[in-house]
Image 1 (cartoon, rainbow, N blue to C red):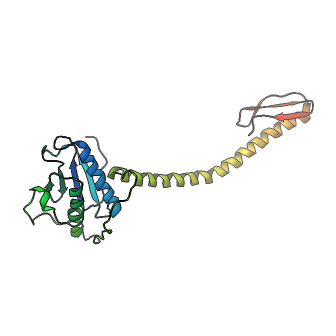
Image 2: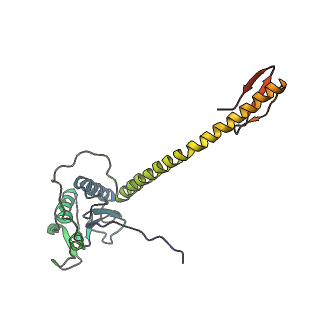
Amino acid sequence: MVEESVPNMRHYGRQLFICNHGDCAPAEEAERLHRLALARNRQQGLNKLRNPHRIKCTLADCLGVCQGGPIAVVYPDGTWYHGVDEAGLERIYREHLIGGKPVEALIFHRHYPEGEEPAYAPDVRGDEALDPVAWGPLREEAEPETDREAVEREEEAAAQLRRMAARRARKKKGLGRCDRGDARAGNAVGWYLRRISDGGGEAIGPVGDGGGAGRVGGGVGSVAGCD
């Protein structure tokens, strides 16, 4: 069996799935709800990977209900919602995902009996209590990033720091190489000058590592290809 690296994932609070298969409701409606959830995530700071109360917002190809959509479900609670429009999603986000209280008017199925849902994971883990940002209208903003994009952004920032450190290390080592290169070039020039003084004739040959040519003649010397 081929060994695979074990994935790593940070803690989070709850996860919202929205069906965008297109049978229970047009896929465009699900995508619009998804963008709204991501925008609320950004406003509340619950898209941050380091936030243990992070809310994962996911589009699912099919949740298997295929009617009465848009369909959404909150896990690990196992609370299923139907007919979710933008106003309904706002309530689900604020009252359930943040507040922990399901929106009864939109529920059509419960995975657990009412009141017996799993305990909120951050409370069980002993994480710092959630401090919600004041609720208000969303500002016009660029397309919100997905969870994957947030991960990629942080990974790219870390990679950039590694590249900068590597460049600094190479620059320090490169100073010694430049000094040696200058010495080699100086030796090559000296060789041509000696040819001038010895014979005064014409000589063409390589100079240093640059592959250039040196020409001397009539007591006048010129060196090309040494930058």
